[in-house]
Image 1: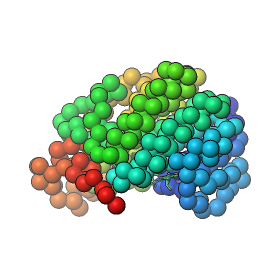
Image 2: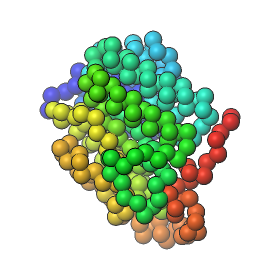
Image 3: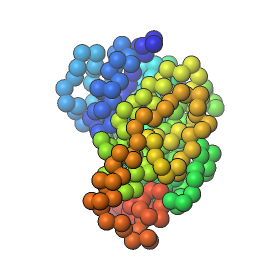
Image 4: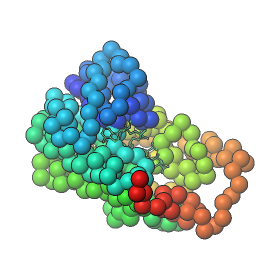
Length: 267
Ligand code: NAI
Ligand code: 15L
């Protein structure tokens, strides 16, 4: 497999960015890391540039010289509009403008299941189901997905728009039996998105094998991505340790679970 020349990982100090550093170390000759806060140490083929996604000039310098971007940076939960605007609205605009005026790198955009969080748990979705965000955070990811599509249609910049479910070492609650994505499956997806000859701009649901069947990825068979892990490994443990919640609890009603009940944060 031919290596990428330089891969930019944004959000490199965060949970998934930190995992990306070890899982993707061999994917590129050079790895450029960035975050608004420092990362823990810098390894052999890595460099670190501290910057805020809201700073257009800094983002342009970051993207310059990269042939691929794994975009994990930004606000990752429900927060104030000001924080979300900087990281996920302006930040994504800055990323795509930087991509347009530099080398048009291929982008892995870490979108979220909260773009569709207000669909009910008995509904089945595919890539063409209209978004139904469950808050400001989810709406900002819908914006990011749409901006990616604009830059694909107008400028040919390819993006994997990946609606990640719940990416943690293991499912943390009953809802995550339907949404869990293992680190191994996430990073095999990132790799496939960067090595397939033609990516385009697909919406992909980032989920390991699950019985729930909420999300249909059948239109992205061309990626050759096969999740290997399954949330079923933890079903018995979770169903024993966690009592079944009320039938009208957010986790029971909506795919976005508790995010659907979050307030609009003012501070
Ligand atoms: P995280 O919150 O641990 O990491 C995000 C990183 O982005 C942080 O290190 C933070 O400092 C950085 N960041 C925030 N605003 C910034 C700004 N304005 N400029 C520069 N850096 C900024 O989140 P995590 O869990 O690593 O998620 C990574 C991405 O994946 C996020 O975009 C999140 O929305 C998405 N995602 C994650 C899921 C998960 O289960 N972990 C599920 C769905 C989506
Ligand atoms: C997300 O989008 C968040 O970034 C992550 O922290 C989890 O809360 C995840 O969704 C989820 O829905 O479990």
